[in-house]
Amino acid sequence: MSTTISPLAVPFPALPQIAGVTPRIARAGYKDWGRCDLTYVELDPGTAVAGVFTKNVCCSSEVELGREQVKAGRARALIVNAGNSNAFTGYRGREAVEAIMAQVAGHLGCPPGEVFVSSTGVIGVPLPKDKAYAGVAAALAAAPCSWEEAARTIGTTDTFAKGAGATAIVDGKRVSFAAIIKGSGMIAPDMATMLGYVFTDAAVEPAFLQQCLAAANRETFSCITVDSDTSTSDTVLAFATGRAGNAPLASFDSPGADAFAAALADVCRQLAHLVVRDGEGAQKFIAITVTGAAGDDSARRVGLAIANSPLVKTAIAGEDANWGRVVMAVGKAGEPADRDRLSIGFGGTWAAREGQPLPDYDEAPVAAHLKGREVTIEVDLGLGQGRATVWTCDLTHGYISINADYRS
Image (cartoon, helix red, strand yellow):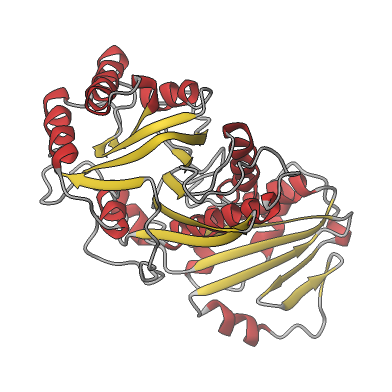
């Protein structure tokens, strides 16, 4: 992780211990850095699992295997390697993942398919089997660690450890959530480009857990972008141990299902915002709300066209109230829009209404708003009831510096 902390960083929260979940860390030495870079999380037998994965067609073997593994719906362990993505490495990369799965499965006495593996870092370098084996062996023997230590260990260009938690009452039982995530660059929807893990002690059937995670993903991870690039490796997994003692949730007809789904979505939203706050070189956190669209999906796509525009992002970085760049981004989105119905504002101050600059528009409050760390952009298309909010950050010289030097 970087030694320079993002100005948008937030302190790591106090997260609960989740019954049936034990995190440990170790140093495999995937890169020449003096810190742990392998996280191992042991899960109770019978733990349910669900996942969403990158849509990048050049994905890693970890993603390919994970997509198949979640279909069975059960997990006993998670291994996360930081510093090497093991993507675009052919059969050697797959063999390395399968070796890790077999090693952990042998230790736990479970099927290899219940061991999930994620890797993050440089593309095109096979994961070294010797370092992976030694790192896993050290992790299996390590003492349990804190959630913050686990979050730091999975980071790469991250500048701060990221975690989120929540609680809910389900079937009269208090259920808890603890989650960690890494992500700073190569962040775009389809799903989100990062590695994120949510742990809960709720009892949930795997199919319903998958349904809830997919729904949460659509409104959170798939509504963030740092640089429009979708990674080869990224994954979000949710694990439910069932130790809270509630009647297993099987559908939204189950007692407490709504509360569970809301808490899961809240945790995912917290995690998604943290990734944007740590966007490479970011100085400002930007929320873009689009209303009046033909539909919610259309609103989301318009919002992302704005959020991914280098011209919009650099204008925000320069604290320039250039609302014409937002007009441009709306027009290029490929979604229904009418120039003569379009309204645009910043921080609650409208600059243009229904296709016209406001005659009494005062740029001073907008300029003051743009000097802050948190910026809002409002767009009303004036066409329908569709709405969406997406989140991004500004584009600064820091982003170029980080990525120009990424492999060194």
